[in-house]
Length: 217
Image 1 (tube, one colour):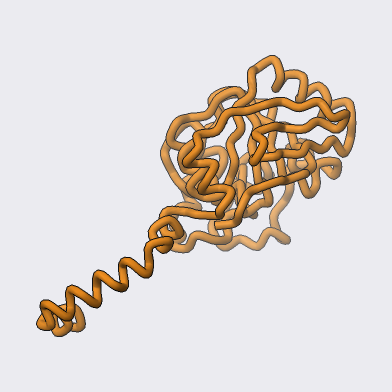
Image 2 (tube, helix red, strand yellow):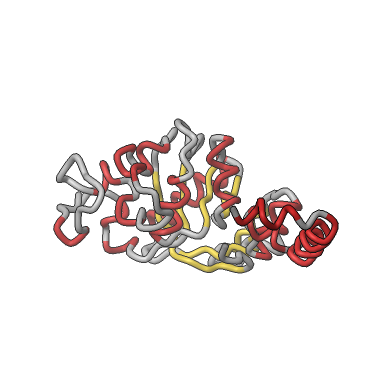
């Protein structure tokens, strides 16, 4: 998992409440058995006019919706998504944070998130920042007024830094912060103890050698 420490990026506004996971990545794209390749289908039903989108359709042959925010030139290359309350509601599909991250987003800022989506973001290196609704409103206003509006997210200090230097503090659980700073997903956390795991396996085989045959069969 990619580490998250300090990130500065262009902000794209998703000015809709209750954006559910089927809007983030529609159900037909969940058929893939891979964990990659979902970026082109992020917000597929809103992003493209040729619907329904299907897995494997080349992005170059799709018909973009010019009115959708991510298709507007001023937001090209955005890596911070500004959203409204209850972002990520609906089904618990882990493909939603995969699609957001593979599109290029590193952080989301919203007043609230659906619980499972919130947890899935952390497990995949995507930082879901919670700020008060009033602060989010002001950020939406700033993004609308200033093309190229960027924010800096400092996870170590737990602040969002605005262009003029004003800082917006946010909370994050210490364990989740530790995992993001170290780039540790569940597998990474387990592999921290690989030497102990190998030692245990070696000792077990030494005392119960018949297990070697059982394990290899």
